[in-house]
Amino acid sequence: MEKIELVLDTFKGRNEYYPLFSLWKHFPYDDKDPVLLANAHEKFFTRHSFDLMKISPHGRYPVVDYGCKVSKEYDPFTGSTRCDECCIKNTIDWETIEPVNVNEGEFGNQIKAVELIHKKLESLPKMMTIFSPLMVASKMDQNLVSNLRNHPKTMKDSLYILYEVMLEFALSSIDSGADGIFLASQHLRETELKWEEVEKYEIFFLKKIIEKIKRKSDFTVLHIHGENIFFKQVNEKIKADAYNWHDQLTWPNIDEAAKISNQGLLAGIDETKSLIEGNKENIKQNILDSINISQKHDNRIIISPGCVIPITVSEESIDIVSSTIKKSRG
Image 1 (cartoon, rainbow, N blue to C red):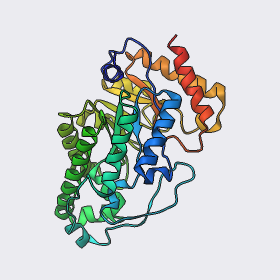
Image 2 (cartoon, rainbow, N blue to C red):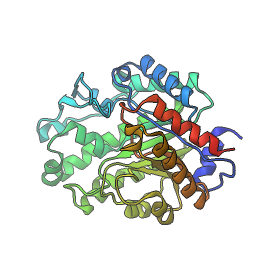
Image 3 (cartoon, rainbow, N blue to C red):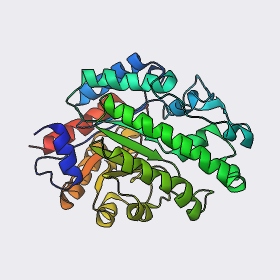
């Protein structure tokens, strides 16, 4: 059986073989160059023989071509970056937003990385990281919530443009070798936004993206970022093939989530404590517990972290995850 078939069977609760697993992280400095980024992914995933790859570009890639100035520095813990200067200074700037060519500029660099990774690891199932339009907007505008409330038409029109760009980027990523999409949202949780605003500005566009890309992609994983998430509501409103969330930090745990949703789940690895501390027995027990829960629910769970693992996590700690899972396969 090809790996992609095993991934898809897992999402549907039909995996009768063995538990799948994956980890992902940022690659600071390498992620500013498509060749270096591809090489970093190949090295990381080849060493640990993961069953699924999440391609991890730097977190500000969608806003560079719009004029945001990305910092040269990275978070020493997560490996993520930030904008030194946002491209949106006032509401008028939103009125001038236009589509960009996703095969050129910074978007084009990410497409090139996908192509290179696919050439190196053709048989490995891969998902490209895509951000929701609202998440992209939040990286461009420090006054996003105020603008959404005071200028709803302008913002809805602008979000449509960002939706079209991210959709086109997703489709281009699939054409370039990605099997699926890792669609990330930071707004499916308790924030300044009211639930009605979440439905209007986030869920609306997420559903449109998933509906459009499912005609071409093999699968879509929805990443629900942060704590105090709307897991049950999201499961009712959005039918991605699988969900990924910080199960070690927030409700629901993976057992609860598997009872709420019939979709596939990516969860179970404690990247917040066990991996960081590097205690072999704690890491091993964490993985064995997650495998047992997955087996209770038709092996619908791909053992994975709730988000990127910290760049401070040692390769030896990741080796423990790999060896524990492989040993469990008999």
